[in-house]
Length: 439
Image 1 (cartoon, rainbow, N blue to C red):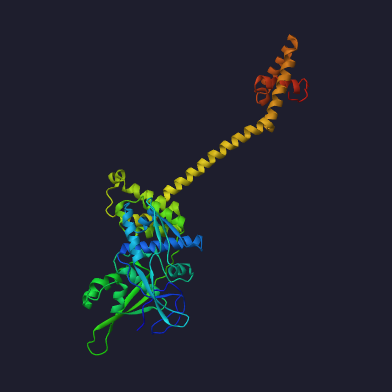
Image 2 (image 1 turned 90 degrees about the vertical axis):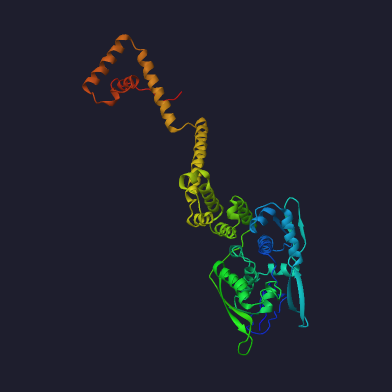
């Protein structure tokens, strides 16, 4: 019979059905459940935060988390620091048990507390450490500790998470055989709990397996293992599993903080759902903050009293939330924001352009302005010339202009303003020309 394994280090590639001993620093082969679902979530939250920090600083040994992130990821909606403190103490009191091979190839039993030193300030800032074996595993690029909040937060039954993590640890083998005693160790159950196999299956095993199949990235089936002989009693189970194609990237610390802040905007009815954090993480990683924020704004607007009056109450807020994210109902709001940004940028550009044009004009007038000034100076020169003529000479010019207007009614130069008509007549008929200058 093969022992269970939830490796925090690289697993052996041996396919032996016998007891597995891994030639690495540590190989976890017995794991007791941490307790309640919320304790499981907190421990996995700390691992996720640590891994996110290690992406930025691979040498980190001390990690930090704000209370708002912790309460968001473990799905609680209150600021009870003492509640978190008690959970942290429980994690320090619980431990992972393992067997290792020492240098003399002797099997050595080991026990590692789940959580190392902690410092929890009254303002909600948590500083925490993991003990060396766990920290080493977290830094191992081939670590088998699979932390996927998109999945784990969907598991709400007490025994689902420890079973799921053990199945994932043996996913490459495709099966895992466990005695009843081993399963009870994993689930932290005493021998007299659910003593009858039928009751054990009905109350523990089947609900957990069903939830794992519905909510996670693996499909699990199991068969009874019976003691030899006719009518042998069930002594254990053989679990078979296959992995659904799925990939999950650990969000950065910055992304985790953004998710936590957006999570605080949601109504309490959604915060009670374990899947919401997973949905936020999925779309934040895939499409970014603006995508998630615009869809949350749409969702909240739809829940508002004003919209309820117009369209009626929302009977399934969680369903609407998931559909809003999937269908991207917040798209129009993002487009409007983009348009507003473009218009604002264009306004800024227009203002800058006008300021620049004004500056350039003051330094170097444009060709058009120069031409206008030259034309005006010429008009004034011919006007001055005309005004200095005698009365008879002026009368002759006026008569000549009137005759041209009668005989050439379509001549544009003679239906223009009087000063232009005067300049044209003196140039073309009288042959009078002044030098083009601008004063």
